[in-house]
Length: 247
Image (cartoon, rainbow, N blue to C red; front, side, top):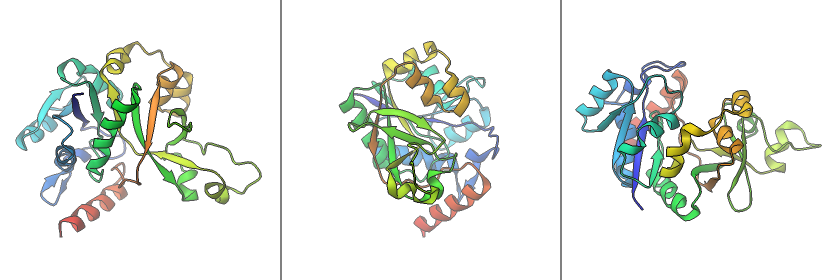
Protein backbone atom coordinates (compact mmCIF):
# COMPACT_ATOMS: atom_id res chain seq x y z
CA UNK A 1 0.00 0.00 0.00
CA UNK A 2 1.37 3.40 -0.98
CA UNK A 3 0.64 6.44 1.19
CA UNK A 4 0.95 10.20 0.71
CA UNK A 5 0.34 13.03 3.18
CA UNK A 6 -1.46 16.15 1.96
CA UNK A 7 -1.47 19.41 3.92
CA UNK A 8 -4.16 21.87 2.77
CA UNK A 9 -3.01 25.41 3.64
CA UNK A 10 -5.12 28.46 2.92
CA UNK A 11 -3.81 31.97 3.42
CA UNK A 12 -7.28 33.32 3.99
CA UNK A 13 -8.95 32.26 7.24
CA UNK A 14 -12.15 33.72 8.64
CA UNK A 15 -11.02 33.75 12.27
CA UNK A 16 -7.25 34.18 11.98
CA UNK A 17 -6.09 35.37 8.55
CA UNK A 18 -2.59 34.41 7.36
CA UNK A 19 -2.12 32.06 10.29
CA UNK A 20 -0.21 29.42 8.30
CA UNK A 21 2.59 31.96 7.71
CA UNK A 22 2.83 33.06 11.34
CA UNK A 23 6.43 32.88 12.57
CA UNK A 24 7.00 30.60 15.56
CA UNK A 25 10.59 30.56 16.75
CA UNK A 26 12.01 31.25 13.31
CA UNK A 27 9.81 28.83 11.34
CA UNK A 28 6.33 29.35 10.00
CA UNK A 29 3.35 27.46 11.38
CA UNK A 30 3.11 25.71 8.02
CA UNK A 31 6.74 24.57 8.12
CA UNK A 32 6.22 23.13 11.59
CA UNK A 33 3.20 21.14 10.35
CA UNK A 34 5.23 19.94 7.38
CA UNK A 35 7.93 18.74 9.79
CA UNK A 36 5.33 16.63 11.62
CA UNK A 37 4.38 14.93 8.35
CA UNK A 38 8.00 14.34 7.39
CA UNK A 39 8.78 12.83 10.80
CA UNK A 40 5.87 10.42 10.39
CA UNK A 41 7.60 8.99 7.34
CA UNK A 42 4.38 7.58 5.86
CA UNK A 43 5.24 8.66 2.34
CA UNK A 44 5.75 11.78 0.25
CA UNK A 45 4.35 15.02 1.64
CA UNK A 46 2.66 17.71 -0.45
CA UNK A 47 1.26 21.11 0.51
CA UNK A 48 -1.96 22.19 -1.22
CA UNK A 49 -2.65 25.91 -1.49
CA UNK A 50 -4.44 28.48 -3.62
CA UNK A 51 -2.06 31.31 -2.64
CA UNK A 52 1.19 32.09 -4.43
CA UNK A 53 2.64 33.54 -1.23
CA UNK A 54 2.08 30.30 0.66
CA UNK A 55 3.49 28.31 -2.25
CA UNK A 56 6.62 30.46 -2.25
CA UNK A 57 7.21 30.03 1.47
CA UNK A 58 6.65 26.27 1.26
CA UNK A 59 9.00 25.81 -1.67
CA UNK A 60 11.64 27.86 0.17
CA UNK A 61 11.78 25.29 2.97
CA UNK A 62 11.86 22.43 0.48
CA UNK A 63 8.24 21.30 0.32
CA UNK A 64 6.47 19.97 -2.73
CA UNK A 65 3.50 22.21 -3.60
CA UNK A 66 0.40 21.70 -5.70
CA UNK A 67 -1.88 24.64 -6.48
CA UNK A 68 -5.63 24.21 -5.98
CA UNK A 69 -8.72 26.21 -6.91
CA UNK A 70 -9.56 28.99 -4.42
CA UNK A 71 -13.26 28.17 -4.83
CA UNK A 72 -12.92 24.76 -3.16
CA UNK A 73 -14.64 24.85 0.21
CA UNK A 74 -12.88 22.16 2.25
CA UNK A 75 -9.56 20.46 2.75
CA UNK A 76 -11.08 17.22 1.49
CA UNK A 77 -12.20 18.92 -1.72
CA UNK A 78 -8.69 20.25 -2.23
CA UNK A 79 -7.16 16.81 -1.73
CA UNK A 80 -9.71 15.24 -4.08
CA UNK A 81 -8.91 17.82 -6.76
CA UNK A 82 -5.28 16.62 -6.98
CA UNK A 83 -5.72 12.90 -6.33
CA UNK A 84 -4.57 11.97 -9.82
CA UNK A 85 -1.28 13.77 -9.16
CA UNK A 86 -0.63 11.72 -6.03
CA UNK A 87 0.80 8.25 -6.51
CA UNK A 88 -0.88 6.76 -3.46
CA UNK A 89 -3.55 4.23 -2.49
CA UNK A 90 -4.24 6.16 0.74
CA UNK A 91 -3.92 9.90 1.34
CA UNK A 92 -3.64 11.25 4.88
CA UNK A 93 -5.02 14.79 5.24
CA UNK A 94 -3.15 16.73 7.93
CA UNK A 95 -4.50 20.19 8.68
CA UNK A 96 -2.11 23.04 7.97
CA UNK A 97 -2.74 24.53 11.43
CA UNK A 98 -2.07 21.44 13.58
CA UNK A 99 1.66 21.44 14.44
CA UNK A 100 1.18 19.59 17.74
CA UNK A 101 -0.13 16.44 16.06
CA UNK A 102 1.78 13.33 17.11
CA UNK A 103 3.44 11.87 13.98
CA UNK A 104 2.41 8.41 15.20
CA UNK A 105 -1.23 9.36 14.60
CA UNK A 106 -0.48 9.79 10.89
CA UNK A 107 1.25 6.41 10.82
CA UNK A 108 -1.69 4.74 12.54
CA UNK A 109 -4.22 6.48 10.30
CA UNK A 110 -2.53 5.00 7.23
CA UNK A 111 -2.31 1.56 8.85
CA UNK A 112 -5.93 1.62 10.05
CA UNK A 113 -7.12 2.70 6.61
CA UNK A 114 -5.44 -0.33 5.11
CA UNK A 115 -6.68 -2.70 7.83
CA UNK A 116 -10.32 -1.56 7.80
CA UNK A 117 -10.70 -1.21 4.05
CA UNK A 118 -13.19 1.60 4.63
CA UNK A 119 -13.37 4.70 2.45
CA UNK A 120 -12.42 7.15 5.20
CA UNK A 121 -10.54 6.67 8.46
CA UNK A 122 -10.30 9.17 11.32
CA UNK A 123 -8.79 9.25 14.82
CA UNK A 124 -10.90 9.89 17.91
CA UNK A 125 -10.05 10.62 21.52
CA UNK A 126 -12.02 10.20 24.74
CA UNK A 127 -13.83 13.33 25.96
CA UNK A 128 -13.82 13.48 29.75
CA UNK A 129 -14.25 17.19 30.38
CA UNK A 130 -17.93 18.27 30.49
CA UNK A 131 -16.99 21.57 28.84
CA UNK A 132 -15.59 19.72 25.82
CA UNK A 133 -18.62 17.44 25.63
CA UNK A 134 -20.95 20.42 25.32
CA UNK A 135 -18.68 22.67 23.24
CA UNK A 136 -20.01 22.90 19.64
CA UNK A 137 -16.47 23.52 18.40
CA UNK A 138 -15.58 19.97 19.50
CA UNK A 139 -16.90 17.50 16.95
CA UNK A 140 -18.40 14.44 18.63
CA UNK A 141 -18.19 11.03 16.96
CA UNK A 142 -20.69 8.24 17.66
CA UNK A 143 -19.09 4.84 17.08
CA UNK A 144 -20.13 1.22 16.78
CA UNK A 145 -18.25 -1.47 18.71
CA UNK A 146 -16.02 -2.20 15.72
CA UNK A 147 -15.04 1.47 15.30
CA UNK A 148 -17.45 2.18 12.44
CA UNK A 149 -18.68 5.78 12.61
CA UNK A 150 -22.45 6.07 13.02
CA UNK A 151 -22.82 9.85 13.27
CA UNK A 152 -20.87 13.06 13.86
CA UNK A 153 -22.28 16.12 15.58
CA UNK A 154 -21.47 19.42 17.21
CA UNK A 155 -24.06 18.54 19.83
CA UNK A 156 -23.39 16.28 22.79
CA UNK A 157 -24.31 12.87 21.39
CA UNK A 158 -25.48 10.54 22.85
CA UNK A 159 -28.07 12.35 24.95
CA UNK A 160 -27.83 11.22 28.59
CA UNK A 161 -31.27 10.96 30.08
CA UNK A 162 -31.92 11.76 33.75
CA UNK A 163 -28.49 13.26 34.38
CA UNK A 164 -27.31 16.86 34.81
CA UNK A 165 -25.20 18.19 31.96
CA UNK A 166 -22.05 18.27 34.05
CA UNK A 167 -22.38 14.51 34.74
CA UNK A 168 -22.81 13.35 31.13
CA UNK A 169 -19.11 12.61 30.59
CA UNK A 170 -19.18 10.22 33.55
CA UNK A 171 -22.46 8.54 32.55
CA UNK A 172 -21.67 7.86 28.87
CA UNK A 173 -18.70 7.56 26.56
CA UNK A 174 -18.05 10.54 24.30
CA UNK A 175 -15.47 10.73 21.51
CA UNK A 176 -13.99 13.78 19.82
CA UNK A 177 -12.55 13.88 16.31
CA UNK A 178 -8.79 14.44 16.47
CA UNK A 179 -8.84 16.47 13.26
CA UNK A 180 -7.25 14.47 10.45
CA UNK A 181 -8.44 11.93 7.88
CA UNK A 182 -7.07 9.10 5.78
CA UNK A 183 -8.91 8.56 2.50
CA UNK A 184 -8.74 5.81 -0.06
CA UNK A 185 -7.96 6.82 -3.60
CA UNK A 186 -11.34 5.46 -4.74
CA UNK A 187 -13.18 7.69 -2.27
CA UNK A 188 -11.31 10.79 -3.39
CA UNK A 189 -12.07 10.06 -7.02
CA UNK A 190 -15.79 9.72 -6.25
CA UNK A 191 -15.90 12.71 -3.91
CA UNK A 192 -17.33 15.14 -6.46
CA UNK A 193 -20.28 12.84 -7.11
CA UNK A 194 -21.52 12.80 -3.51
CA UNK A 195 -24.88 14.61 -3.23
CA UNK A 196 -25.39 17.54 -0.90
CA UNK A 197 -26.84 16.68 2.51
CA UNK A 198 -29.26 18.66 4.70
CA UNK A 199 -27.43 17.23 7.72
CA UNK A 200 -24.16 18.70 6.50
CA UNK A 201 -25.87 22.04 5.91
CA UNK A 202 -27.31 22.02 9.44
CA UNK A 203 -24.16 21.14 11.36
CA UNK A 204 -21.52 22.38 8.90
CA UNK A 205 -19.74 19.02 9.07
CA UNK A 206 -18.57 17.44 5.83
CA UNK A 207 -18.57 13.97 7.40
CA UNK A 208 -22.36 14.08 7.39
CA UNK A 209 -22.45 14.35 3.59
CA UNK A 210 -20.36 11.20 3.42
CA UNK A 211 -22.45 9.30 5.96
CA UNK A 212 -25.69 10.38 4.27
CA UNK A 213 -24.37 8.96 1.00
CA UNK A 214 -23.56 5.61 2.64
CA UNK A 215 -19.78 6.11 2.78
CA UNK A 216 -18.16 3.77 5.32
CA UNK A 217 -16.05 5.64 7.89
CA UNK A 218 -13.71 3.88 10.31
CA UNK A 219 -12.41 5.35 13.57
CA UNK A 220 -9.54 4.42 15.86
CA UNK A 221 -8.59 5.64 19.33
CA UNK A 222 -5.70 7.98 20.13
CA UNK A 223 -4.62 10.16 23.00
CA UNK A 224 -5.87 13.79 22.93
CA UNK A 225 -3.81 15.85 20.50
CA UNK A 226 -2.53 19.37 20.93
CA UNK A 227 -4.93 22.09 19.77
CA UNK A 228 -5.03 23.32 16.20
CA UNK A 229 -4.79 27.05 15.57
CA UNK A 230 -8.20 28.61 14.98
CA UNK A 231 -7.98 31.76 17.11
CA UNK A 232 -5.36 34.13 18.50
CA UNK A 233 -5.64 32.38 21.87
CA UNK A 234 -4.98 29.02 20.17
CA UNK A 235 -1.93 30.51 18.46
CA UNK A 236 -0.53 31.71 21.76
CA UNK A 237 -1.04 28.29 23.37
CA UNK A 238 0.49 26.41 20.44
CA UNK A 239 3.43 28.82 20.25
CA UNK A 240 4.16 28.36 23.95
CA UNK A 241 3.99 24.56 23.60
CA UNK A 242 6.30 24.47 20.57
CA UNK A 243 8.87 26.79 22.11
CA UNK A 244 8.79 24.81 25.35
CA UNK A 245 9.60 21.64 23.41
CA UNK A 246 12.59 23.36 21.82
CA UNK A 247 14.02 24.66 25.08
